[in-house]
Amino acid sequence: MKLQGLIKSALVGLKTNKSRSALTTLGIVIGVTAIILVMALGETAEKTIVNELGGLGAETVVIRPGQEPTGPSGYAEIFLSNSLKERELEALKKAANVPDLLDAAPEVLIGGSVAYKGETFRPVILGFDANFMRRALKMELGRGDLFNDDDIRSKAKVALIGQRVANELFGDEDPLGKFIEIKSVKFRVIGLYAQRGQVVFFNVDELVLVPYTSAQAFLFGEKHFHQIIARAKSPELVDRMVADIKLTLRELHDIADPKKDDFFIQTQQGLVQQVSSIISVFSIFLSLVVAISLVVGGIGIMNIMLVSVTERTREIGLRKAVGATNRNILAQFLLEAVFLTALGGLIGIILGALFAWLALFGLKAVANINSPFSFPWVGALIGFTVSAAVGVIFGLYPARQAAKKSPIEALRWE
Image (cartoon, rainbow, N blue to C red; front, top):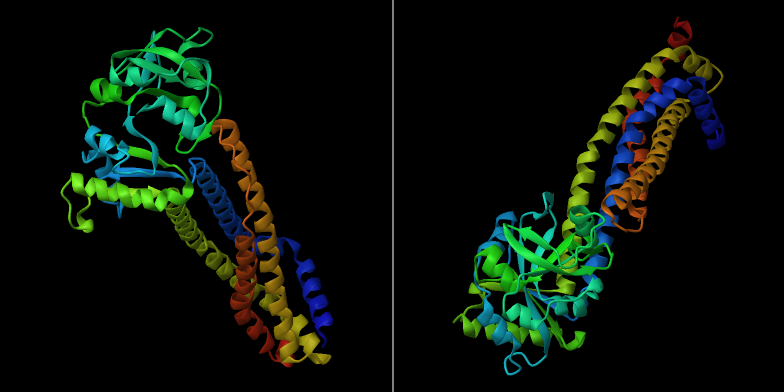
């Protein structure tokens, strides 16, 4: 029998039992939908984070205390290590030590909530340099003034806040000149950032920014920094600047062996690659876990196909009586299984993309995350191929059982 005839016979067999065919594909649909959903959201997250990291500029590097983390426990060391302090910052700013450095600023991360007249909100609280942030991240104020170097030197209790912070704490009241409480310490609001949304690792609208010296003195209680962000005069000078930074810090800390460094430096390219690798591995791991449902779906297909073979024994006998060979019968039932799983794969790809788009739409509305939808073409190709392969693998045994039936015994089947 020609391939066209086999395909026609397989389609007729599937149409005869539409409900059974629909239920048979359900496991494959669920599995492929989950895979596409995971991979689509993973790719979208990766592109979003990479784009945000790129917003710092190729000339920017991040200097962090402690040794470079190799696991979750290593990241805790960044917050506990005290290897970056004011003397390190001053040493790096000296042109004799790091001639390619344009400017640098330390960062202190503070946890907790902010209060005003009984209203509380939990924002991102940073001790930083407002002018450096304006230059590096193009963060402009909507109203008010930035705090300056004099405020940093005098440890002024002043703050800049984002739009959502203002809305949550003040409502319709003008926040400028008012005092907010951070850990029972009052800070005067002198500026309000223009609405912007996500920038690198924080949301500008949910930001409270204070001088880093004030954060150390009144909120953190320690004299070290969580990181120092430095900018080279041009992207081409980054590698040379990084080498000078390492040399300066090693001399300052009396470190002869680079393996004993109590700091590490991340360039934007290195950080982007690290984040991309983490998200890719995580997406693949989740996809493999979800792929187990395809195996379950394949077992379901095999069971239902075996039932179908039993119910269609007389049909098999009639087809063999009029000249169909064992190979024809095997090909027909195998094609039926492949059609079912391939169709389930296509439906799963469509549903997975739809659910991923809806999830992204929801995140934009709820979390103000503005990320373009990214369709996982590779994931779609893998999902469709694997679903078709499941049809071949789990449909082969029922098809062989059908092909081995004796035409005489099949015709006698009641």
